[in-house]
Length: 394
Image (cartoon, rainbow, N blue to C red; front, top):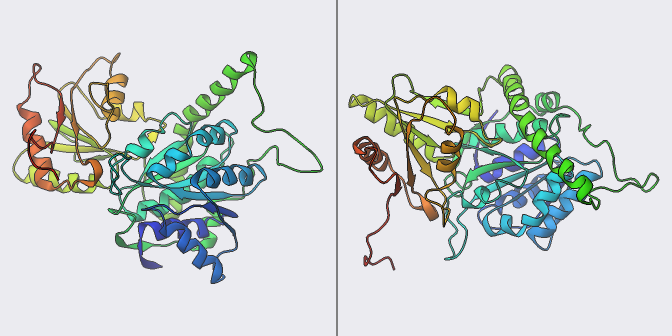
């Protein structure tokens, strides 16, 4: 069945199809449509779940932790300052190995106050122990959310998952979505059997307990091992998804990389615009390509290396800022994984699209031209779209 929906509505439908039991949420732009649609689905009898409107984002994730620990399948949603407000509880959720799924409407972090899109909010939580998957379009929001429950509940993983979607570009944009039958989704995900210790008054247990220095390191190591195991688990689950629903996913997506002399690297909705720019550049005889990251955590190091060589230039599109570091996060992580490799392609960091600033095909053609003109002595950190000092930005 096809249905035209906004990205936020898609997340609610994914929760319904995935037989989520508990949805605690606090509204925040641009993710407010998630609890609104959930309320509607429950009120109409289309969804059998408990919706808990909480007094804050901190409370929402706290309720999610309690509900998941008691054996429920749980989903919530937030964005930006709301995700930042959850910060202390995010590591608790992963440290307790709870399979929570959360939709993130990627939005710029204040100040100044900005409700539009970049990826600073989820990027800031990259060390929280949550798997992070980035959608390019609304169909991917549905599919990745459904897959996220199966990934997080896998016995080798038992970690929470963020589904990241660009604010307004996806959350409020209407697209035709291919919605699978609920029984097919149920057969794909299976029952939630992850909770080896379920909170039960008849059999009291402690979760997330105090750990002295003699034990704490081992607990943190377990989260790291689970994140590493998630690489192969995600691959297997995406393969199963393709067999059942005939839609193909991987942790990275190559686009026109054959003989490419410059490769864009990006995440999220902007990748669709880059694909169009690559097509235009190819028509002009310029050898451009795109490597899109679907998974940012776990970072797909081996899959990325498979597509890179010393004969290419890499133009990283970073929609985040790391003050105090010469570059931004995606750029830094790419450089890190290539540090001890036999090949070291030239990597250029383009910081762009911050706070929802539009990025067009022409912008990426300009980036291609600029990157190809650079040499080893050039400054490899470029604040693309930065207005000159003194220009009126009021």
